[in-house]
Length: 324
Ligand SMILES: NC(=O)c1ccc[n+]([C@@H]2O[C@H](COP(=O)([O-])OP(=O)(O)OC[C@H]3O[C@@H](n4cnc5c(N)ncnc54)[C@H](OP(=O)(O)O)[C@@H]3O)[C@@H](O)[C@H]2O)c1
Image (cartoon, rainbow, N blue to C red):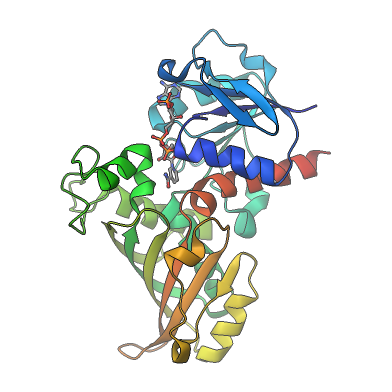
């Protein structure tokens, strides 16, 4: 039986790992890790009770085939290499390794083959990047991307349990201002060039996943007072001309995408449609008349599922299939 460690099992993404693993009935010997704070906590999973273990340097690192990580960058940098060195394949949700040239950054529908070429660690992209690259990959394949403009409207769950507390309890702990009454045009900290780290993650990770190192791309990321699922307005310019109806059919045929676009009946992607699913919903597909070959669309996905846990479990599932 496979042995799988879940690191960060008590967090929003960690809990969703368990939900998705159970849905997919991936049976294994699991060990759940979190911080000292959660040591001894009992979590019910796959009809069994698991006692949460504290992650320390004394655990038997050579006892795992796979490790799913969602405990932030600091813990990933400290512990993922220890699991990998002792033979486990780590799939990490933090930003610790994403831009490392030797580490694959994987969205299974796009570049699963890259995951096979790993040295023990595979990175899961940022939540706002994962949902955007699915339609972008489809468009690039057929019409060749020339330029991309992202504007995001990101849910508080993207900032973990503390983000949800700020909204529900009207606190100012995780975010710099009251999220309950504001749209905050800042996600993560600012860099010298005026961009936030989140905006740079979207730009750099998109280029890496699409294997388009020089793609012209910019981003503005905002936090909105919404519990779950990120929404994104995406504007693209393509090299080749397209017909809007063809784009709609073509996007809908791409694995993982559901086109939800019937404006006559006020139908377009909404958070309430995406919540709890692993699909990327695309709508408001229309021409941008300000440039040649310009396109606008709206993109919504569950940031905890497809944006984090489900994407990682899909990678795990495919690796297991490949190796057996
Ligand atoms: N939320 C999203 O939409 C999303 C999307 C993509 C990627 N991610 C990434 O996924 C990671 C987790 O995010 P989250 O939203 O699940 O955060 P979260 O709800 O705050 O959970 C954090 C998890 O990390 C654990 N942890 C903290 N310190 C630890 C330590 N010293 N040793 C072991 N475990 C420790 C926590 O355990 P305790 O409960 O014991 O503190 C908890 O299980 C982050 O890197 C985040 O950037 C999140």
